[in-house]
Amino acid sequence: MMNDSGRQCISVEEFIDSVIILDREGKIKEVNRATLDLLAYDRKDLLNTPMRKVCKAFSLAGIMKKVPIRDYEMIYRDGRNDEIPVSVNVSAAKTGEEISDVILVARDSRKTRELIMELTGSRRELEKSYAKLHDKKDDLVKSEKLAFTGRIAANIAHEIRNPLTNIAMSVHALEKTLTPEGASSRYIQVIVRNVERINFLITELLNCARPSKLDLRMHDPHKILNSALDSARLMIKSQNIRVVKKFAARPLKISVDREHIERVFLNMIKNAGDAMPGGGKLTIATERSNESFVVRIQDAGRGIPEKDIIRLFDPFFSTKKQGVGLGLTVCYGIIVSHGGTIGVESIPRKGSVFTISLPMFREVVPE
Image (cartoon, rainbow, N blue to C red; front, side, top):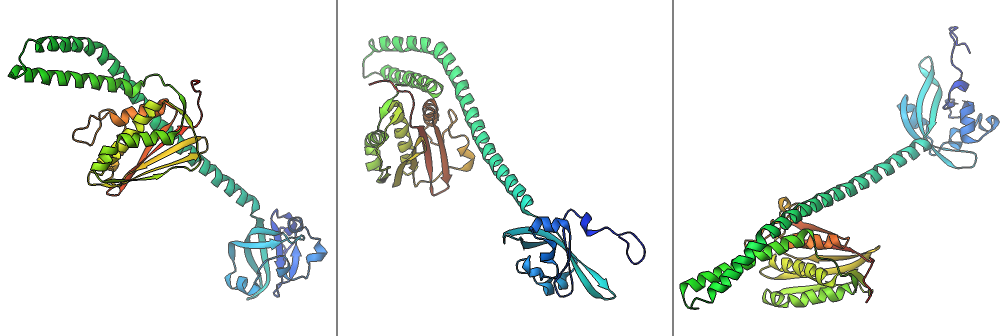
């Protein structure tokens, strides 16, 4: 096709995008094959018809004020009255100073939108995978710390317990030769207490990384929680703590080692009490989530500083003056040995919530 100056022009039929040419009244003057394919119309059905037949909320006056326009979002309607989102570039042909034709070059946005949605979905999946990977990394680091602690504990147990036993036996023999009222007898009692404490620490270290073989049986977790609360009743009463139980209404049983899990619950309850020395509300909530039993133990205490949360389950880390720093480490080892997870969230001066998740079903020892 040649223009008035004799130069060759590109025909609208050569465009892979939809091309619609309008006259000054907004009627369709020309279309290309790509437009007919996009809108499922015959050429005769479009020529000399108003653009509003194929474009939702079309305003020629509004477009004329903005020409030229790039990437203008429009909604076309096809022959079945289905809506097609398009991205349109609008330009104008002039005769002298006046606009003679308006040219709309449109690209179907559906595939682009689908691609964006797919990419957005993929990004969300990647973010979820990254979060899971991050959690698994944290669990792996904690497990490695426990394993390292276990190796140290095993060496300590081997190297120290034998001489410690000899010390204990010798002290007890020496004690029999002394009068109970003498100063030497008091020193003997100090030695005995410290020998017992060292032996306790060694035992706790071993329990951190290598809990004893689990005796898995089906138990009602709510009964275990109530038993732990009963064991802590003196602390609860003396500190004026109000216990709020929000147990799942549906009866259930899970396969756990009752003794170990009760120890975890009791430790969590005592920690909550330690966080509220002046009293407060202790909330224990349970629910079944998919194939897991979830327990949330929430206090209204002073909270845990953010810098301490990442170290909370580390061996020998404690924020208590008299704390050894093995209680939460032992709890972590017990929960992990059950195939579960434990986490904590805390807000300074508002309290903390420990969340324990245990699998509902594991191989159990027959009753």
